Length: 268
Picture (tube, rainbow, N blue to C red):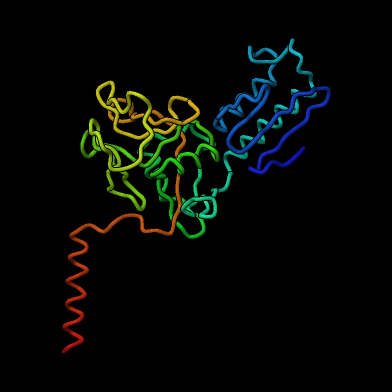
């Protein structure tokens, strides 16, 4: 068994020329086809492989019993890896922002709705930094997520719930910033919409979903509320030492008043 650079492992099954790769974010096997699966999916697949009566059992193929055991062990190891994978830093040395990122895939439930992900992100911390749903503000950042975590669907920290067609980042350093205005020519920020998106389909879709279409570029889709409030996926959490939001004008006014009062007291 070899250790891969991304923390995964590689098995060379006995009596086979096929290598099977297991990483924290993807299982690659047989012609290097990539499967982005949740831990529950992996465990279910492992159980199916062990059950001869199940239609997915690999009986009759060239995979022998030894290879089957290796595959099952690897699937279970990959499931554990996804559940416990540590955040990864996008370093400034590689052109990044030195923030840390993590794909959050729960081990015991199917996934998160957008609202559940939004509530869960700030409960997470890394190296003293509080998490927030990731805000993707450049093609380079999008490319980093693809290279590090794959193209499987995941919620991002944006929506147009406040004003239909006006897409904003709702948390993190960019909280309140508009990145896309539907129908406008020039756009205020980066976006990676699939062709024809966002389309506000089916009586409304207000939440931002990365990788919905399964393409190599992990194109974005509008999804979630109000039409699909119970759709569950993993999500990306981001950690940085930057402030989580810009102070509201009223807050700035209070701070200014406090400083002015303190200055007057010092003069007295």
